[in-house]
View 1 (tube, rainbow, N blue to C red):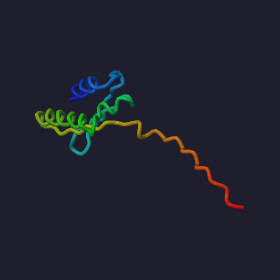
View 2: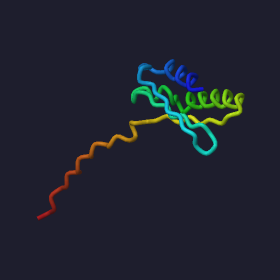
View 3: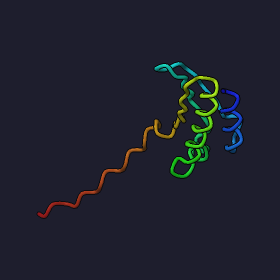
View 4: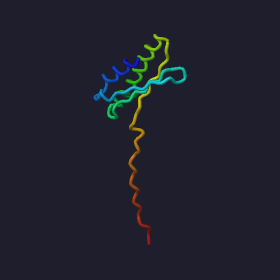
Length: 96
């Protein structure tokens, strides 16, 4: 299963050497956490989540054939980066 996920992810991204996969068992299912380069996250997710949805469908079918349950999550490090503080709005001087 891991080889299938990595193969598909590397085919989708511009930086295939930055594709990594972590697997763990969670709630009776196998959880796969896919990490790609920050600029490739959109390619893996796709418009309106269609690409990741298709990946999940493929994995679900492959897992069902083997009698397993799987989940696929995409790690998005862009959300975890602190946002730059917005400059404080300039205040107009009070009438004197």
